Length: 147
Image 1 (cartoon, one colour):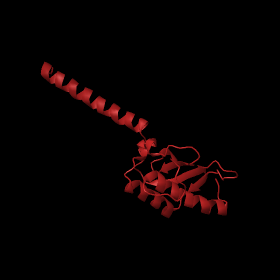
Image 2 (cartoon, rainbow, N blue to C red; image 1 turned 30 degrees about the vertical axis):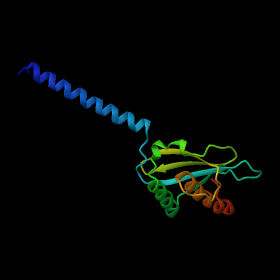
Image 3 (cartoon, rainbow, N blue to C red; image 1 turned 90 degrees about the horizontal axis):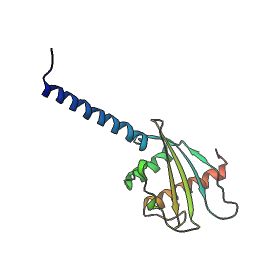
Image 4 (spheres, helix red, strand yellow; image 1 turned 180 degrees about the vertical axis):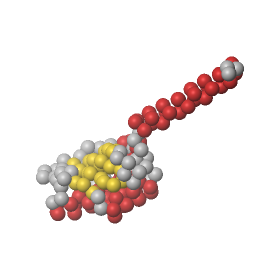
């Protein structure tokens, strides 16, 4: 049974559309990792240009700490897969925070935060996240649980 020309064209069109959709889905997952899965672990380090500042990397697996970070992400509607570094403060001599997020889906996302307002500032995602991580850092540095 031979299909008519309009039917063949329709089938080709459907096949092309399906292929385009598949390519878009695959390319999106490669370009923008899906961090919609729950965060299971956060690795962080901070840097401030002062003598003897602890720049060790620490690992967070505590559910309460991760929940507090998630709450900030939700509060400020931050797209972790597409964090806009323009939200960072533009100065020198501030507090730099590096976060590596690991999700249940085995994806990883890095964030670089830079705050010039110090570890106690608040009011936006960068300031609040810097404050949160600074609180973790103070506790973790004293207990010596560096990675």
